[in-house]
Amino acid sequence: MATIVLAHGAWSAAWAWKKMRPLFRAAGHEFFSPTYTGLGERAHLSNPEIDLTTHINDVAAVLEFEDLKDVTLIGHSYGGMVATGVAEKARRRIGRVVYLDAFAPKDGQSLFDLVGPQAAENMLGKAKGEGGGWRVPAMPMPPDTAPEDVSWATPRRRSQPLKSFEQKIRLQSTEPPPRHYIYAKKSGPGDTFRQFAERAKSEPGWKYYEIDASHNPHITCPQDLMALLTRIMADK
Image 1 (cartoon, rainbow, N blue to C red):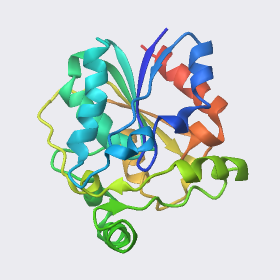
Image 2: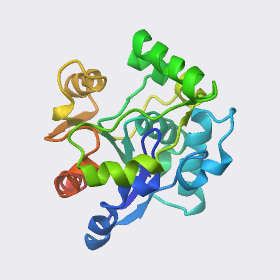
Image 3: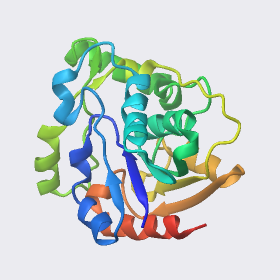
């Protein structure tokens, strides 16, 4: 049995992993899926001061108050930024970090640094135009998402606090936990996450995997994702 903690993606929340919960439960795993401040069922707490540190603290607090150890920490998409910070803050509690088609920042990098200036400018423009200046509206879901999943997920997604994309992460640890990278192959060439896939394939301390899915395999192919996570968690 594993203890699994989720750092979910931007605009999302714990609800987005509803298809994975019964799979984890059936396998005997404990699954904690904290929702970040300002999103999902905590959207009523949204405010302009929420940043990456806020979301790192949201997840790290669960590890502390639940006294979790040897945690498999999954960071999906933006959640890779959060998971990286949590692994730094609560290193002794983390057994491994699984980056699921996720950002994998180095010290001093923000999400805006990693998406590149054009994408950052576009997202900033949307925040000014539609998100009140401090919130970035949600991007469309991948085109292969089933219509019923689009209908379920779209009204639940919330604008992301801008500062969470702007804040640069600060890392000091020279000994991160074992890191695993899952690249979603259907993202296509030139996508944002390919840079981290290439890094994971070439740098020591990483193990690399691929899944035949687009960016949200927890929604589009949960059984396939569960099989891959089971393989990773069995890897000593």
